[in-house]
Image 1 (cartoon, rainbow, N blue to C red):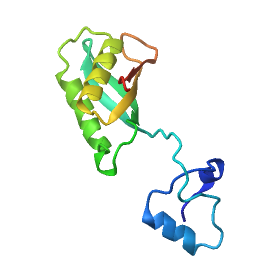
Image 2 (image 1 turned 90 degrees about the vertical axis):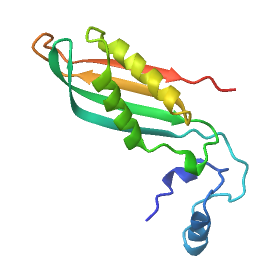
Image 3 (image 1 turned 45 degrees about the vertical axis):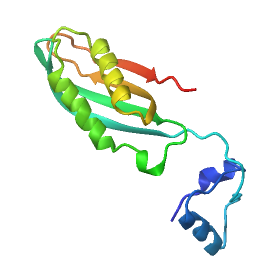
Amino acid sequence: MLDFGIVSFLPNIIIFSNFTKEYLQETKSQPKVEINAELREMTEDFDFQLENYTIFHHGFTHNININVQYQYVKGIENGQYPDFLKLEQDIKQFLVNYPNETDFWEIINKELAKMLLVKYPQLSSITLKIHVQPDVKVTRPRSSTVTLTRYQQ
């Protein structure tokens, strides 16, 4: 069953797919949606987590979690959405090949955000939060959050 709960809060929304139009016509209890209304500004976000990733850095093995959240550029076409698994692969590859063992987590995070925003033009902004679990040297959990936004006209 499709959930139209949020539709009731958006009085003027365009229904994009033919399936949705047909579904609305076939159901007895239709949500209040104008099929051909003016499009209001829309933003789209996606997020995923890379959990329990093991990395050797600062002379120790660390267990980290990375929260990845990004917003798509306005007007993204259906065929342009990136596969988040490719972003995950790029994150892992970046961390494996990161050249400076002494950089703080904040610097790694900043460079990772830059790389992803350059590589994926479909993204208008990205927020990365790296959670580092306690280790032998630092016995407290810590995290770094970076948000990078692409300039858009």
